[in-house]
Length: 188
Ligand SMILES: *[C@@H]1O[C@H](CO)[C@@H](O)[C@H](O)[C@H]1NC(C)=O
Ligand SMILES: *[C@@H]1O[C@H](CO)[C@@H](O)[C@H](O)[C@H]1NC(C)=O
Image 1 (tube, rainbow, N blue to C red):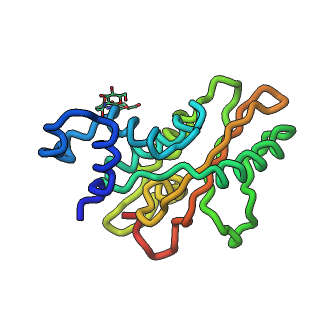
Image 2: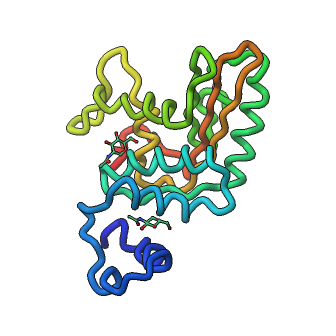
């Protein structure tokens, strides 16, 4: 079963070309525009920033041929409430205590106001360079968990929020369900 097979109805729904119905494009042809369109279709009633978060995540997942994530308004509401709580101090902190995560969560802090959703996802995804799939480990002293959560195979839903902090810096947080990063398991 190809991971993208279930999306074909969505694609067919959004295209009128007969040839696509008869000959779905090979997976290797999935490009940014297609992934963007899929993300948009999986982000009902979303505003632009949410689509930006979702698209950036699904681009990274597509490099491993993984199912795209759906946008979940409940996760977004959760992320939004945590972001609002961080507005005053802009502290890079998790909403869950260590060992008590019921959702996956990635947080980002950036100095200044120019940081966009794609910048946060890029920063997390850049951890890939420190991750070794062969022995499922991270380079000494490095962090890989943000990256592995993004590409965690059994994660299905995403919700994120971005807030401009009172001091002019930027805080972003994303929540994932089901959560990833189970010790001893590979992300994909
Ligand atoms: C897709 O977009 C990313 C960043 O948005 C870019 O780095 C990459 O080159 C793009 N890939 C293609 C095939 O256009
Ligand atoms: C993406 O969606 C737009 C607007 O619906 C459409 O014109 C375009 O052909 C689609 N592109 C792909 C690659 O699916």
